[in-house]
Image 1 (tube, rainbow over the protein chains, first blue to last red):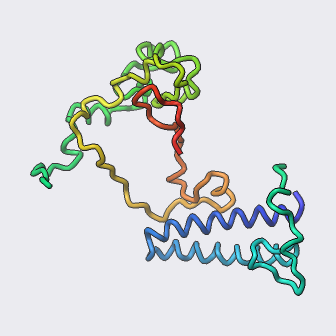
Image 2: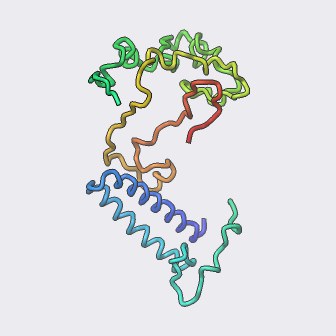
Image 3: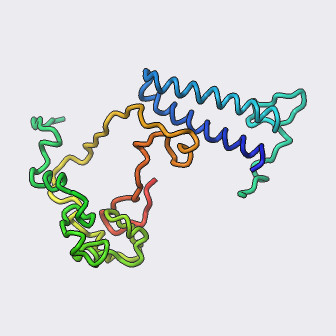
Length: 83
Length: 141
């Protein structure tokens, strides 16, 4: 697995954890351990996302971190393959 | 709207014998709630009484409680098995309870994505829908 895919996998892992914690927190907004977990994983996700976008281009329309418009350089949805 | 004066809890309303039957389920039965055929008396994973009820094309034979037989086979006995909800006639339709979830037994993030949940306690086997008629080849989501 190349570096880009490894990083993407990590982003998926931490995104999932963040969403799960968020769903739990909707029903348990005062659970300190859950908030702690959420913050820890959210920070890690932000860190990974920043790293990914810096090296491989924006993941979302708000992720263009260059003086050039990189958003159009990545694969379009119909260009992805299921490998 | 009229409300019942019956203040019993759902647990109180369950027939005592039926409750005992549920609690006594020690895993020895074939999976049918009221089946107590011991494993040693069985020719297969199902007891003598239950085996003929499962069609060969039943896609989840191993899921003992839940037949997802092909709907093209409307004669599957398991689907007409009235044993699956004995003595529950007359109960209110929607009285469902769930324990309040607690923050515990959290998977590592990598494992969580593989399992589909961060909560070990929610990582449960899924046997599909419980069929109550033979129109049952629908997998719940």
